[in-house]
Amino acid sequence: MIDNGFARPFLDRWGLFRADRTEGINGLRSIAGLLPLLTYRPDPDPMPDELWSPRRLNILIRELHLRSYLEIGVFEGETFANVKARRRYGVDPSPLFDAVLLPRGSTFAVMTSDAFFSTLRASKRFDVAFIDGLHTFEQTYRDVINTFSHLRSGVILIDDTVPIDEYSAIPDQEASYRARDEAGLEGRPWHGDVWRVVMLLDRHHPELEWRTMIDQGNPQTLVWRRSRAAIVTAASNEEIALVTHPTYTDEFAHGVPNYFHPTSESAALADCISSLRD
Ligand SMILES: C[S@@+](CC[C@H](N)C(=O)[O-])C[C@H]1O[C@@H](n2cnc3c(N)ncnc32)[C@H](O)[C@@H]1O
Image 1 (cartoon, rainbow, N blue to C red):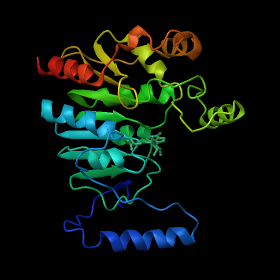
Image 2 (cartoon, rainbow, N blue to C red; image 1 turned 30 degrees about the horizontal axis):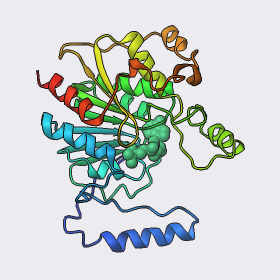
Image 3 (cartoon, helix red, strand yellow; image 1 turned 135 degrees about the vertical axis):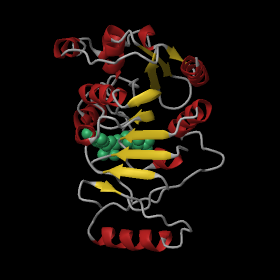
């Protein structure tokens, strides 16, 4: 680990140390009562259906010849390890994997996304980003705005933009779980109020284009600039506060609202690719 919180990957090219090292670390973590660190599983072939994020990102990377990938919120590294980009940058204050055994060409920052952007040099550019960190509306919107200021003419994929029900839409994660338990429902789906980001895109970002994929896998929204020269400026605090008024139940009473531009995964990717190729 380097002083500023960045970890440079150790290149275990032949994987000789990988199993032993992970086993040893997990032995010590178990004695300390900590969860095991998971090894990453790069490049499964074929890509399982549940890996919808790397599937979508890899199509964009391949078709648009994108090179540099940023992931905000990396968790166990499942998406991070399976995205095929030449350069990968990850940000997470509490990653749940061994940050030393990263895929080649990776840089990792163990910090919040706000801290990451505040230390990033102004000229740093990415081609494609996946925003999947803290699932609150305000934080996700800030991540979108900060990412656009470091994005070439590329695309952002935002996770969890469509809650599955009113319980998963409760912004506080613990409160969401409690309400679900009290309603006698199983599972732990939680999407928070990230959906308000799309409402804010609709109200304040005519310079952006987006599609929400709702047919296979977790709904996610793809966002890109309408024109290369478009400058993305954050909405004011008053404008941001206004989109906290509508409720999930009102907005989603008749399904996913039209302003989400809901569509299939293949149509969303095709629209984005043809728009960014023009
Ligand atoms: C849903 S998980 C990410 C899953 C991952 N993107 C994947 O596809 O496998 C959310 C992650 O966001 C991280 N996180 C929480 N707050 C954050 C913040 N302020 N900035 C960046 N990451 C954050 C959490 O530590 C957690 O690991």
